Image (cartoon, rainbow, N blue to C red; front, side, top):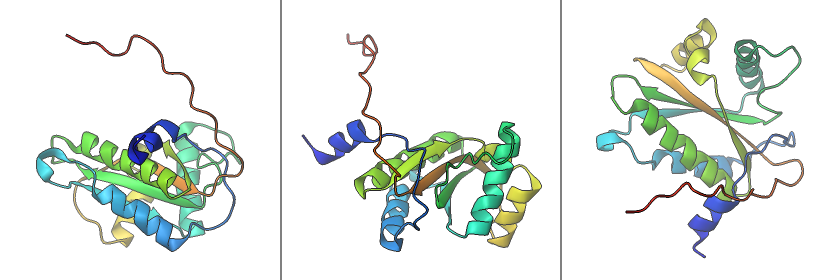
Length: 174
C-alpha cells in the first residue's frame, strides 16, 4: 500500500510524551509539510508558531487549562515538549478550513517522521486573550488572526493505540 495512505490509516493521537526535545530536523520537516497544505484559492492564509521554549509552552498550557476548566496541575498538552499553534487570517472566507488542513498535514508529517502528535483545541480562545495577543505582538505578527488549533508534538512515551475498526455506513454512492 502507498506509504501516504498507510500513514493516514496508522496515525493516532498521542497523549503521553517523553520529555526529550523534538530534533530540529524533524520539527522542520513537520513545519514544512504544514506549509504545503491546500488552501482556498491558493492564498496560504494560515501561519504556524512553533513553540519549543519551555516557559512559553507552559504558559500556553496554563491558559488552555484555564479555558478548559481543568484543575491544576492538569496539562492539556499531555507533556509534549513542542507545541505548534496554527492560526489563520480571518479576512479569508476559508480560514478555518485552511488552518484545519494545515493541522492535518502537521499530524500526518509527525507520524511520518516517527513523532507523536495530537490536535488540541482552544486555540481560538487562547489567542483572543491577552496572553495570546501578547505572544503575537512579541513575534511581530500583525493582522486579524484566529487560532485554529494546537498541534502538540513529541516522542511518544509508550505505544500508540491500534486504529479502531471504521464505522460502517459512512460512504454513499450514486
